[in-house]
Image 1 (cartoon, rainbow, N blue to C red):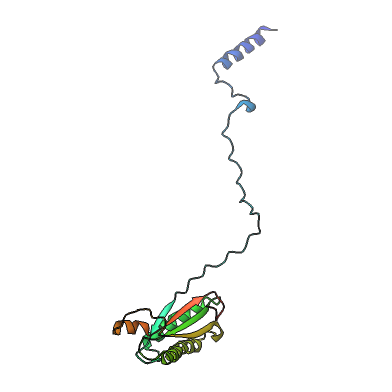
Image 2 (tube, rainbow, N blue to C red; image 1 turned 180 degrees about the horizontal axis):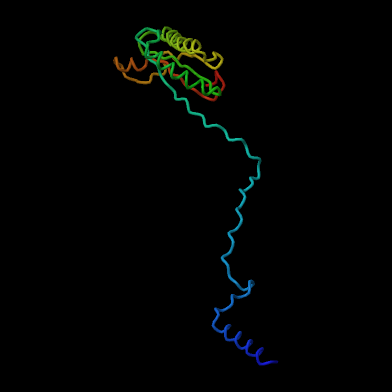
Length: 173
């Protein structure tokens, strides 16, 4: 080897000693682990059913009558209109209308009056567009008082139609 060549190697070695250390080989580098791939949603063991729409419940309501009357008041008509609107959104429901009376009068008379009251509400709902086949109208007469009292306040509370929506077949108790 010649002297100039030895001098060049020596110069290179000196230059290497002041250079920053070399990076470790790629296999020895520690990089943060890659995030795991997203987990697919669990597959149910049964077929997935289409989501059923949430249906608003239809609340039972009552409409009230004057003494010895089966005529719907403006307030009763307003209540029936709201009830009709709710029932239109629930074609799966049936309706039972129970006509009631206060304790005054004979049993036979009150059964007939309770039926006229239930029929008045049914007729009004049908006129609004509710299918009559979805409605059963019955009379309880004075046999199922809501208020057992024997004064005007109790009698007024008992002169009513109760509108009871259900999933049962029309006519079933």
